[in-house]
Length: 584
Image (tube, rainbow, N blue to C red; front, side):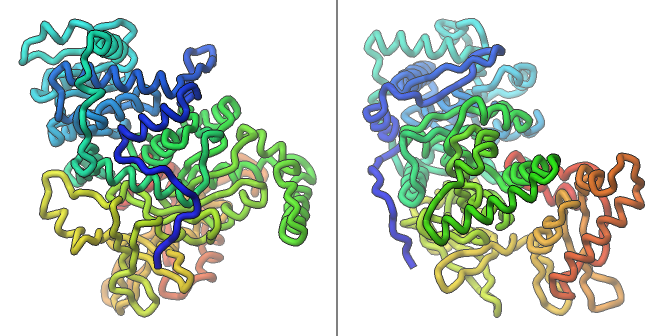
């Protein structure tokens, strides 16, 4: 079943062509709206100014001898990160985005593995970079995105080949502009091979396990235009970039899709600043993972519960609003729930959710309040989007339908229709960097074997059931998907998150299901009406919740025993639990 586009999209050859077209269409419009100082002031950067900086930086990098080299970038989401990304891929070399949460040893390992010749970094990494500069022989240039001086114009010209040179981002921009004025068009006229590797992304995991995913302009461009053909986004939209840009989900959807459509991008200053930044920047679109989105929804109801009678009034208002919308096609949601909308900036109309399954009740709840939530599914190897719930067709409990131009099927399905999700399309990676054996294991006859398990219904909607490597296979051959059991446990208002695994019982034919559970201590405090509660009080509440969850699932999937964990699980920067760490 092929998905047809809903909206017409303009063709682009590559990301360089995309930038050129966007500047022609939106020259004087703000591409970015960024905070300039500690006084909380914002300023706009137009599409024309953005392109000037990309051209200047690219010209300076080629002048430094970095043509066709690997160039890394590490830091928080920011304007300089975006300029660096496009200055490298649009005619200089290969960009290597690195996770800013990695320890120094892992950053060193990935810089070695990628054979990076230069690294751009945020000022907070200066001490790490100085230490690495004395150890790494391949990295010649260290470029500080926060340096206040203009060290760059001539600094690299006097360096010896054995020296590591520290330069400033601003200095390189100034150097590049001077070179362009003098007639240097080495970057501006540089051709782009859309089918060649231009992006090297390391997947989550330790550096020994992390695979280097090779992506091309063709991969990314096919993916971003396909997304825009089924989700309506235009130049009136703006986005608050919250998820880390080094991850291809945010990079493609929160950055490149927005530049393609002439949107305005602002940057979140950290998870604890989301509410403040939403009010400051007033975005119309936000891209999130379920953990953050579910937290936002939970907070709406917690705030309603604090005022006497407000929770009941909110439920009644939702009922009336839904009836008016469904029966009479009268939409009063944004007016009726104006206060809730204002708390998230007042303009949010679309939330894109990915990276994990979202609780369907949360999607329905936001829709009842007048905010559209669209869940999708993807992976780094697919640039990254594979399926998404479209503007015209959606299911709250589904990952949606394949993007136009992307083929998806279920391989080796069992009696329940569950099998491995395999994907084919222009968005599928070139392979794993320097690892042909790993590539051959997942790429077969043009199909990418994702390692994710799922099923498809009669209407062509796909559903994720879990990861192939996480499946608990019982001694009598039945499959238990930990993610399914975890979703059931996590419905409890007193459980913040959970982790499930299986263990064969010695001397029997049974495989037992165990869980590690992080309680929601704030919810437990409210339930008990006191701060003074014991470990036994917590255990009893969680035990009751586990029993309640068990009643809704088959006997062989039920949790037999659990332990309490006081701190949240260790997670990746996209808020996925690091199972291999937590099971140790």
